[in-house]
Structure formats: structure tokens, C-alpha cells
Length: 392
Image 1 (cartoon, rainbow, N blue to C red):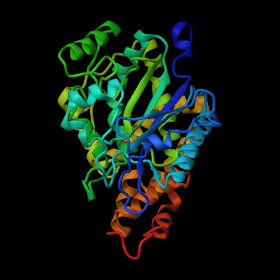
Image 2 (image 1 turned 180 degrees about the vertical axis):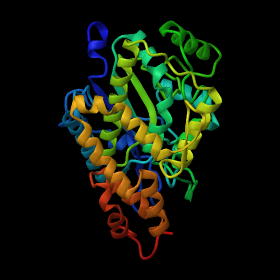
Image 3 (image 1 turned 30 degrees about the vertical axis):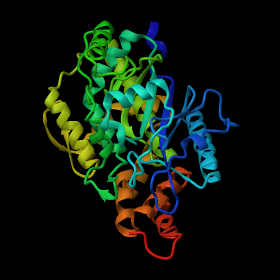
Image 4 (image 1 turned 120 degrees about the vertical axis):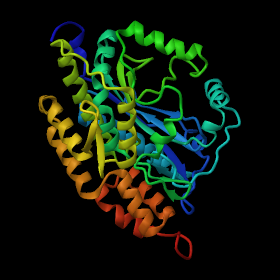
């Protein structure tokens, strides 16, 4: 490739949002500021830790990574540091898209931007502790970024179905794989982005939404994939935060491969598909509801299809890109683990049903700290209660 497409789809970075929870009850705990109080030591170059909207949350961001080993090192270092600091204040670091048990957190002195968000969205964010896994794939050319996003839209629901990790909310099973996505759908302009003629069209639409008073600023759009407003990347905001590092790496490798594949479509002049807005909304809803366990919606044919078939279609599409980057074997390995042990949502649901929600939260914390999905049942059973009885 020549010109600006040479660098497109080569680099990747991940932002992971986490919950902070109390070990015995499993309820979220407003200990984020304490966890972030000490300057981090030993993180790779470019890796950062941040406060989030609520004091019951923290965020870790990798630096710009060129490959799987680099990315994995960044993710592990940040998680290890946050787990260590959480343990020091008698808290758990928990990777879940929504809190199974919540404690409403009020920030005494929020940043100016967070204060504006609280004011604008009022009750919608009063109990909003949703956590996502955001992947940035390098695409330096802003026009190319919009052209790629136009062609990514049919695959967004399948990425959600694979990443569902938020079935529990306020002590109950919601019946959804991603309750986080249901909560996010309340915000203006959420879901699959519309088609844009070019970058100017995209920027004008964002500016209109700001002018209409429904976005705090140009950084605030809620589309599930977008050209980043601050970085030379395409940002995927569709996934629930990943239970394990393996799953975070899987999602990053798949999205990078999807961008690399789509860049080639743009280069050869393949037209962007134009699925209907209602079909797109139905596809996102179905992915949030069923994950990989039921039907999804094929946006191009506007009909129900088993979600696992849509995942196979996605893998078939990106396989050449995964082979080119040497990532195919890693993707297959983690997908085999998910087939054997379930998505994050399935694992949460089983643990909560068998051992109670507080034990399920401790299982999530064990996975977050580095245990693989294989040991989830033993983790939950072994920490069923630190009190004198069951957790139910």
C-alpha cells in the first residue's frame, strides 16, 4: 500500500474500565480515588490510569501497541497495579460491564467535564457505573477513517455478542447478556453510527448534536464505532469490559483485523452497505439480549441468524488479516476457551445462580486479576463467603 493507508490498521490500543467492589458484600465501593492516589510504577511507556465518571470506577489505557505481546504486557501491567492498590484499601478490582450490586457514588468535587455530564444527563447517569472495553486502531487519514467506519457497521452487533459481560444489575439477572448496552441506549445518538459522505459530513453531524444540546461536547458522541475525536484512530466502543486479559486481547486483535480488511475494501472501491436504521437497532438489541446463545440479526439480509453463524462469518472475513499479522492461532485459542466456558455473561450468570451474587463478584475479581476462565467455578466456590453462611 502507498500513501496514508500504509499505516492504517497496524497499531492498536485499549482502554479498560473497571468497577471497585467491597469483598464481602460484592457492592461497588467509592474507593477509586484511593486506588489512584499513588503514582503508578512500572507501567509500560504510554500506559495511563484515569479516574472515571463515578468514584466506584477506574480506567486503564495502554500505550500504542504494535502486536499481541506488546498489548498483553500493557494490559497485564495495568491490571496488576490496580489490583495491588485495590487490595491495599481492602477492595476488589472487577471487570464487569455493569455492577451486579451497586452503591450509588456521589463525587464531591467532579472535574468540570464530569460535572457538565452529570448536569446534562441528570437521572440517566445518577446510577450509571457502566464499564466498557474501548479499542483504538490506528487510521491516520481522517477521510479514510470515515470510509472505513461506514463499512464496519454490519459487524458491530457481532462484536457486541462476543463481548457481552453484564447480565446482572441491582442483585438480579436481567435476562440480557449486556445490560450495559441497554443502559447506553438511553443516550442520544447511541448505537450503530449513520452513514457519512465524508469527514466534513461526520464533523457537521457531531457539531449539530452539540448545538442541539444533547452532547456535552464533540468528544461525547455515543456511537459504537467512530473516528476518534482526539486520536488518529478508529475507536470501537461496543464491547463490555473484558473479564480476562485473554478476552481483551481477542477483541483488540479481531477489531484490528476488521479494520485492516475494510481498508482493502475502501482501496478497491467496494461500496459501503446501507442497512436500515431500524434493522441496525434490532441487531444491537438482539446481540445485547442473547450474546452468542441465541439468534442475532444479519443486517445485510435483514433476518434472524444464529449468533454463532454471524461470528463464523466475521472470522471468515478477517482470517486473511489475522494470518498476515500472525494472530490467527491466538484468536482461535481464546475462542476455544469461550466455547468451552462461555462468554463473560454466561460465566457471571452461572456463578450467581450457583453460589450467589457476592461470590460471583469475587469470581469476577479473580478473573480480572489474571485467572483464566477455566477456573471460574472453583474461584466462586472457594470464596463463597467470608462470613458465616451463604451469600444469597
